[in-house]
Length: 134
Image (cartoon, rainbow, N blue to C red; front, side, top):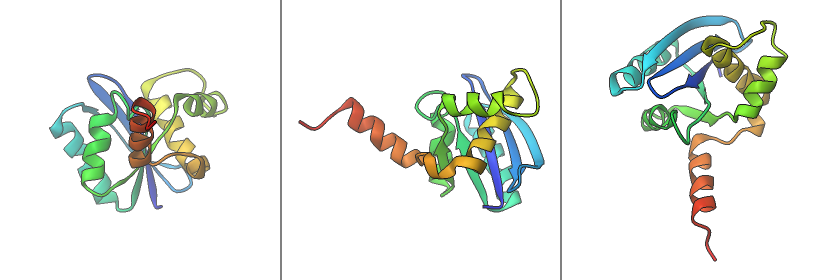
């Protein structure tokens, strides 16, 4: 992984931070939750190269972006809010904002990728949870 993108998702917009493998800032952007917004984020990532995505809320507001990323063969991790909160709490900057949350989401993947479900796995887990086989 050369870069990681942390995405703080909301109904109308997503805040995205791109960091290199040691967490240094590379780019930040805010996109609308539209096809053109998703395309803009993908274009930025593809110009950077090897980007691993960390998205909070793939089961809700982040689902559209996660699906668009998977369709373009990007690796996407679901980051639970509890992980984000922990990384935000111990980060160097105090407070709460979309940009700080996106940074914390990126840090989760940089430090704990082995503990996170990939988006496809998360999707299957949710399907099994919602429709258990008896």
